[in-house]
Length: 611
Image (cartoon, rainbow, N blue to C red; front, side, top):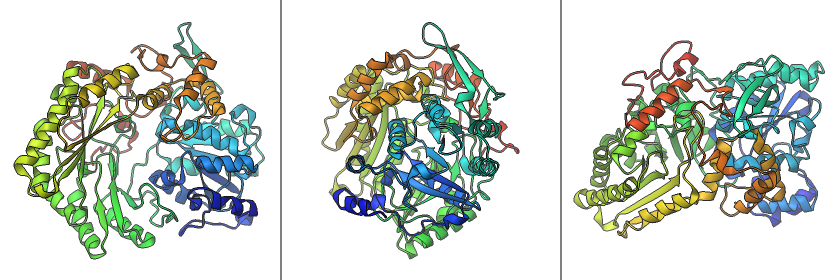
């Protein structure tokens, strides 16, 4: 640590964010390192250290001989100011080396509102923003994560994207870089060769052409690049790399506990859910492997809580077998067991009782819509009876708190659907009054509504987003029908979600907006303390781009979409069919009841899509 940094740290919040030195961090002898990777998470330390994907790839790359992967996080605003005042470049935690000294700069991107942080981190590192301005092999910038499934808003800044799951592709792109560096390739040579790796998308190898109305007229592959790049998956999760010796944070993080990934993908087909489609097909771990990984992770970390994570954990068929093994271990060692991502249609009283012995908190469910008609439109496959039966089981078992998540602005939504949320909440309250065994504590029903954001690679990728004004009207309508003191209601502000929709479905013309907004002062946009829509409004004005083009306009079914060069395994024909079924109010059963023909099974060598 430099003397300058030592002087700065006492003046900023949470200095442990910037020091490194945590238990289980990985340090290497630089004389034995051929490739240095700065693994950048475009948000704060507390968020990044809670990210399971980053922990997996950090451990995996550091197992490669001759490779040292180090962590970099977005500094909080006070540290950014101190760095600017003292001309201090962004550094990596393990070695304290400046990021500009690294061979490769990797970003993992899970949220569109982190895009300004990516540019800020490059600026703070002294690395040119645009790919075309970075010459030679030094500072190759690549990125992955769910946002890479529409990479176009970042196309000018990122050299290449890794699509899908990173365990195999990360090894391949880093190994190729090792070869390129040893043989003194040019950057152009490296990009040409890396584009041949399945799952790698090089934006500069695709030319986008536009019609007079601003819509895309063509996506033209160049330099022999494939017309479509298909994502990568890991087929056998039991044998896949899993880091049981994870870094123990030296300051509190958002998810300050051990995480255990039980399976990937989702058997459901909620038509709004990007992860549910882009992470297909379903692949599971065996309960035996999960139990071993859980015990090893807990023993290496000293954590007193572990979470079973997935998109829908209660859909995991080995859950009973796993919890039968894990709960006695947790009880014996005074460890809390958390099972989030539960569904009201398959969360049993037996599982509730098991969890009560090692975890005493409220329950959280996401009905998403207040009426059965609208739940059928979005293919939630959840009935009011199932919701209320689950609440009945919970209340009779001693629970007195429940959180319910909904969206406003879903396709075909009417005021009747909005008021249906209030009606459902009151039925939950009546269920508590009828069945609660712990009435002394009182009831709390936390209701949260978010602003629907249409996302790529879903049946709703073509939909219009309602205007911010209309969203707020629906929020006020709903709030006016909450009369009980047992209800706590909050809703997301519209500006952030509108901007999220712009960048979720945007094209590469948004790069100049992103750069302009960052220059104006946009940073840490995912944090209420710092999000300032005026920066973005001014940037859109200066760049002559109308954000409504990407939101309230909607997209035509025959229109070329900015992400059409990306294949997540789910066919556009299937998505269109699901969109039409939505407007017909038809439900598509989940994958266990019968294959709906989405196409994701084609990514498997042996067809098996079952959690």
